[in-house]
Image (cartoon, rainbow, N blue to C red; front, side, top):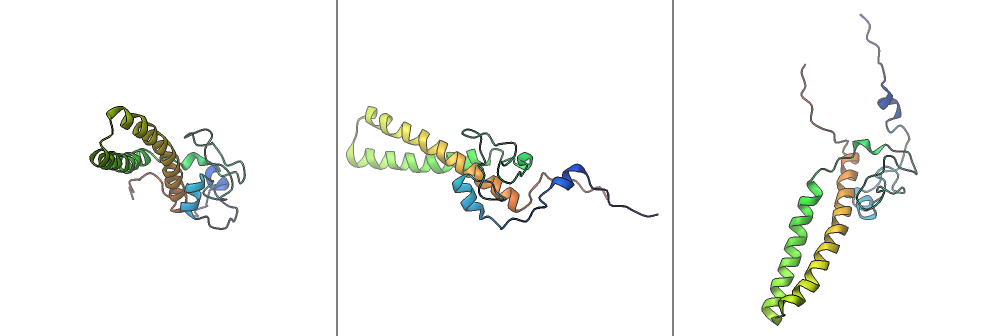
Length: 138
């Protein structure tokens, strides 16, 4: 019996062009395409584009899940609460001044860091060829 290799449509369109490697951290910080490093990854604030307008990479593989949100909560919470406690213990600001300062800072930093971490995790997924787990049934 002879086995033939049958390529599916996804295998035909899968990353056959040669691109120089893009650093995932750089792609994450610039929110750029993980393959070419030039196209924009997001369409809006956090919505991932369907394809890269520069190299045509299909972003259907991209699923950052809840990972970026968990990291953002931990990092920004640590920074903002630490700063608020330091300022309150050393300067004794009134509560209204704390609210005016720390709420916009926390929201702004969270939105920026969420975007960057989501782009970083997508770039790492692409570089490491990550995909959902599969059960190998022999």
